[in-house]
Image 1 (cartoon, one colour):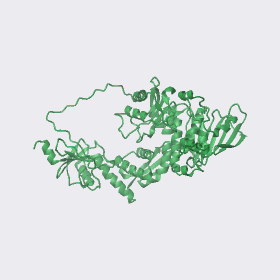
Image 2 (image 1 turned 90 degrees about the vertical axis):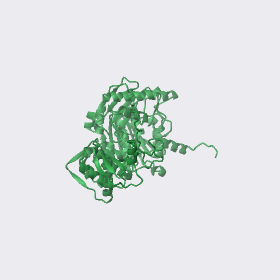
Image 3 (image 1 turned 180 degrees about the horizontal axis):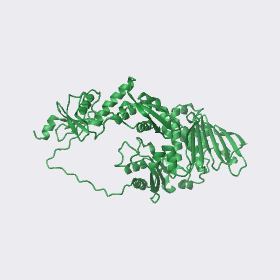
Length: 565
């Protein structure tokens, strides 16, 4: 095919696609413009998931009336002038395509006023061209109103998710900038419903209080690493406060909200030994670094950055968080490995579904440990006792069975829950006193989308005031668990990009985990027998719902060989 220059309208649409992916992309660009203009108040309003309307109002420096016509053009910006400016960026926006890209895919109206002008000016844009300009009353600042996103681009419109999902993205975005700029008063209204209002006091803990709740904010630990290189400051949760997803890790580099696998690993390293792999802290970490050591132009939506010295950044974040947790630096001394003369080789566990051949304890031998037999049916077992209050020991016709009591009970409860939900006969336990669940703005939007699914699993839950829900009943299987913690965890699991069917599976797994006996719980002989009898009736007794082994089998012949019989 011949090489050709693309028409202007095609170029504009491609540029818009790089910047405007969904309604939240519009909100991001407009908020960044407001902050770069020195705004101390930013109000965001959205309707129909941001497709029908997005309006961002600020009290920043405004736009001169004579410059409004330029807003529909590409590569127009007040943020940079020369190529050298890209090496020392201190603003959030810099490409000069935000308003032009929005105007290319939606109807756009801008009402603005600077201190130097006696009145405000309104300009309207269609398809990137200014079609109207007139004087209107306004105080200093700018209001940008976008309507009918992707109205003339049905192919783009069909890829958007539900209104609730798009609202969730918008809520996440606004809350992140509220954490990055605690001195700015942010407000968010979705479909005429107030969702967020931060005080703008300049205290990060005050913003956290509005977003994550007063009690969580009170317990957060201060990250004090202003003396590090790069400097790291913020708040992090004590190990007693955790979440089930990584979505509560907020990273800001020179106040730009980013997603960073590098910084995520640094946080996880800092919490090693404090939190298990399925538990994650709440972190608001702000990194201040020289612009020359940072490339913010590596991602079309500016959500990622590249550090010139990644190791130094990793070390600074890890050190600052460890200091907040009160961890004193220690020298790691490798532990010595001692093997008794003539001791047998350690047995290995081999899942039956593995594509690899079973590993032998020595050349030519069969494996000593087996996780899954060829059939799912358990043989008749006789309970012998309990090991370390975590494993049930049982004798079978072909050797010894070690049963992980928590994993086994998880399997029992999981299959019971799935059966009850399918047959619409979920056992429900009413609470003597309703439990109040306080949610972040993002969590509340997710819960509104998934409340009916939770009701199918036995939760009686209803709205109760701003960002608060009442739990009046729970599934019987978790009657001894903390209902507020369970609901919060389930809502967080919905935020991991799961569709409702996948979320239902996650709910069943989570309820089974919360309701199952724990490792370390002593069981009576009758309780152990009952556990084994119920496990025998399940469809997949050899694994827990997450796929972790629930039973280990030591074959009688291999056991005899280990003793030299």
